[in-house]
Length: 255
Ligand code: ADP
Ligand code: MG
Image 1 (cartoon, protein in one colour):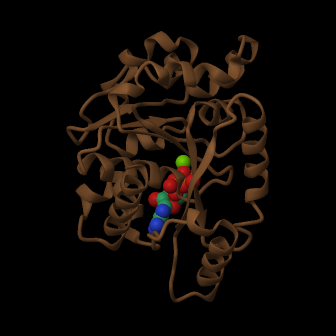
Image 2 (tube, helix red, strand yellow; image 1 turned 90 degrees about the vertical axis):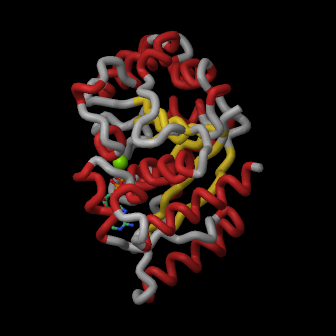
Image 3 (spheres, protein in one colour; image 1 turned 120 degrees about the vertical axis):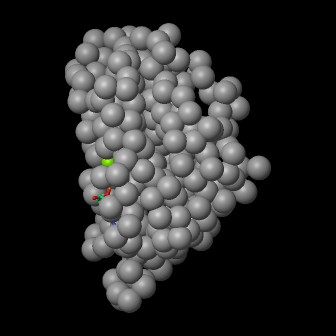
């Protein structure tokens, strides 16, 4: 039975999509049956893993509006034998509005993923940079949250909104939602600031912070334009090694 992990932070540009794509690829390469769910209408995880718009018709939008369609929307064996992808297109933005009138509108994603979770070891959801109904659906469907934290000014201050939302979801539709981990991203060991944010995060979140830290690495920024996860683009890069380290920790934590 899959562990369902939502990768969320309402701030944009902190490494959510980079983490979703590369962690999913690293897990699949380690023979974990993995489903990558693109939960962002920008569809960056979809293109980043190498799916082009003409290679699918159904998307996460269809699965949200009709959970019985989730299987049809999943693309199988994407780049890796063990990697499946539930893609997104800009249509997904419409779901935010269309779901509002549905009963139990927060539970659509959970209903969809319940239908497929037995087929996977991990389901990773790339969340959009907002705390709207799509993100609430993703948090309602998840066992836990993985928060990428960019090693920048105000990184921790920005988290209070996210943690409030997590609290509301816990009090409402998903009491067992946990925080699986905080992942330090775009770390630059030469900068005092990076070291300070890392130290603060470890003080606040303790052992929830992954030992592996994602360095700022230009190879990670280049890979999506080739439609490749970093381990297929440049496996020797520090970025690839770092994400493989996170995957290893997740597998260990989960076994
Ligand atoms: P989010 O999904 O949170 O908006 P992204 O994963 O799209 O963030 O990352 C924002 C930008 O930063 C992208 O252009 C991405 O390629 C780049 N990026 C992400 N992580 C790194 C990293 N560790 N080193 C260098 N560039 C990165
Ligand atoms: Mg993103």
